[in-house]
Length: 307
Image (cartoon, rainbow, N blue to C red; front, side, top):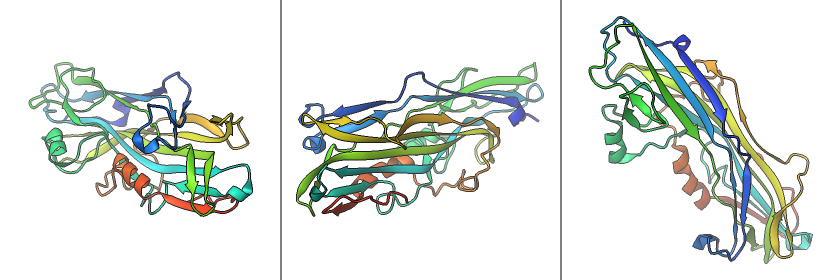
């Protein structure tokens, strides 16, 4: 009977060569959305991350592998996203704004997927029914080389005469955080505070998995973890918001772990890889902005920034 094991799978990871870049759009720039017209905006662009799975399905010639599904599953398990606003004069106060804790964010662990939800998503995943599991939408695989998809072999697919069937599946991601304003009204101090410091970091567990057709168990073959980190400080010069030289603790980088067989041995999420009750990461973003945590003070504060 045809089968695939971790020994039949080679997973290679890499990142694009470009460095993380920061974009500051000053107040009054016509590129700003209406909501940011008076605050300006700052955003960071991280390098792209890639993973390529090369799989060998082994079996007897003629073994049926129709509707076998192959793809990547990704969970987000760390999210730091906050900003600190203050001016040089302590009498003008300070403001702390966070999108990474309740009520902005109900929980850290989430399922990362670009698949559509609702009726459209259900048709997109057919013949696989049920909630979203994989990162990318389901797409038939008609060749050995496949782009970024969750692929399934067509009905009637068989193991060829050589006793093995080769295929590849690609994964890519590039987390770019939503913009932060360059200033913030401090109602307690009756002042406008400028962006002073900001932290954004995300950590993900990414797994390559397969399934021997609808209704069969999903098995993780290979996995790795990766993260992005950004901590920086800012000031105002000649009326413009500018980045300041790096201070201790400031960082801007991307890290990729080594690849392991099966799923990562991490108690924070290893038992929830297939948990369909997890929220979708991207769906949390609008809520985290609408319900963000805001703390204001009439003086400078060393705000507690841990969860």
